Picture 1 (cartoon, helix red, strand yellow):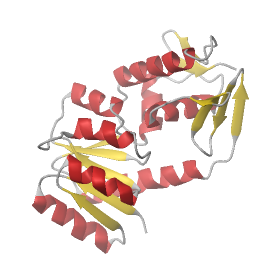
Picture 2 (picture 1 turned 45 degrees about the vertical axis):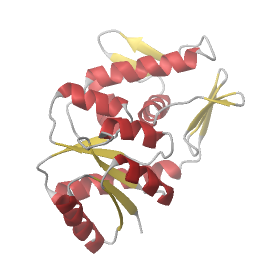
Picture 3 (picture 1 turned 90 degrees about the horizontal axis):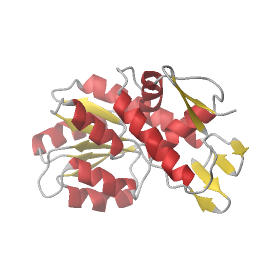
Picture 4 (picture 1 turned 90 degrees about the vertical axis):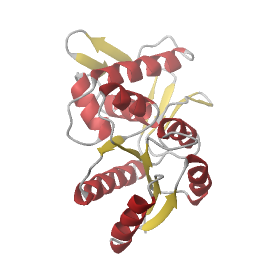
Length: 223
């Protein structure tokens, strides 16, 4: 039975979500603010639905703290529609956005898709080694020698996607759609910033540029 953690200061909304998803055989954890959510993390949820606008600790700050503890998918629940809010949320470690008001069926479909994708990732057993970089697709780790590269979930997803298709060029929209897992207009600013961060982190260990820029087209993993 999959465990879902819902974090929102709206008690009526939490109750509605709890009733709906319990009928669909999920185990439900509830938290009304960030501090309570951090306590519930000990139960290791399979997915977290996180409201952005909350007292004491907003969703962005909470997402950063959660990402230090778990790697499960995090979906933001918000009434905000500004592009910069979306960029900030994804860079903070979120995986998807659900805009209020929302359809319970759409939310259920998003949750199911993210959990299934996470399950597929856990069952991968391949390894890739190139010029000092070891990618363990099963453990979802990138290693240089005995040192692990500290990648966020989305940063790792980009590395896994590009390295799994070496030499192929993908534009920012395709990368965005692939790593976020749903059809959406790609946010080039998110991908540009994430790849910049990946390169900086890899550059601390090696002078090799694993992700190449193909000007006017996108990015590719070096063969």
